Amino acid sequence: MLSKFTTAALAATLSLAASAAMAGAGDYTFEPLNPEMKKGDDITLAIRLTNKRTGKPVSDAVVFKTRVDMAPDGMAEMESAVTPLPSKEPGVYAFKTDLPMAGRYQVTLSAKVQGEPDTVTGKVIVKATK
Image (cartoon, rainbow, N blue to C red; front, side, top):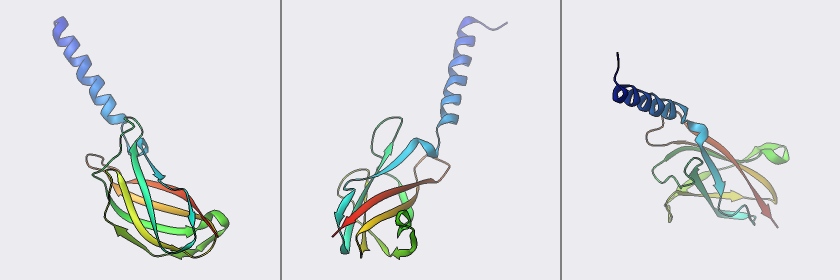
């Protein structure tokens, strides 16, 4: 027969394990710092990665795949090159790209977050104006 202490410890352990198992790639979100900007070359996109459960920025992620295209306006083939830039703020990932025409652009990012076994993937829409 288990003591009350052993039973409580076992319950706490199972609860922690269940919480850890529920954490996943869906617990993170990408959002643009500036969702609207002027069209042009060498535009800096700044994207924040946030842990939705804690509300805190995630500064130790490794963004390994990015794509910028005009898929929201039906022109996914209109893709721009993306170059990573140094971050100036924790949890913010910056990229240089071209937004050659006015319209909506989709930024697709894939990142590895420390301690998270799954890849975190997100899509962010930004708008380029004249």
